[in-house]
Length: 216
Image (cartoon, rainbow, N blue to C red; front, side, top):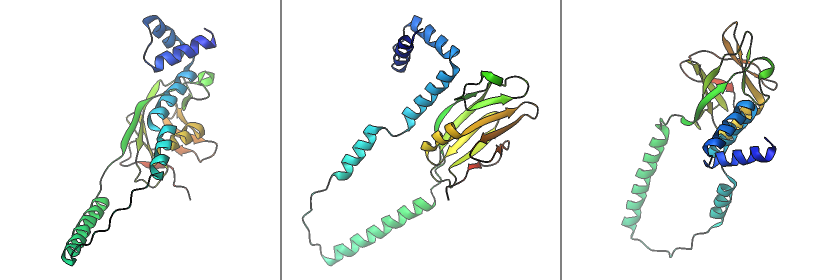
């Protein structure tokens, strides 16, 4: 299969217009190129959750709009006091809602991490195995929690790795800087990076633990 045929299959898959024969060829392509399959998964995730260029242009255009000047109206003093009281009540209620807000993390993506051993692991794969034989795959959940202090927190339990991001743009940081290592002899998982200290994942903690602390 030449490059043109591969690109044509990928475009058709993205638009959901694969024939049955093309679907078999596309599935075979992903099986033969696990690195390509992983890259397509990340592209789909980023397309779904990252701000697009059109969104940025719309935001900038909206920011440039100005509201027409309103005609000044004169209210009796009694109405002014009443309006001030109402504003105080509304302001107090908003502050109370902010302080007592218990909104939890928002699930952004759910899937699996595939593991490879030895030289069969693609360079772009996040997870791989060390030791005796492959370990198959583990669950992966991506969360957004704007209220957390750390850039990235984690929780690992029941064979599922959950990553909590203060900003979803930091998923690129994980993709480029970290790999998930599983050692079959000790059955222990670690997040390993050339830039950051190794983090041995604690199992089934009560709350998320720090993976990448807040920027200083």
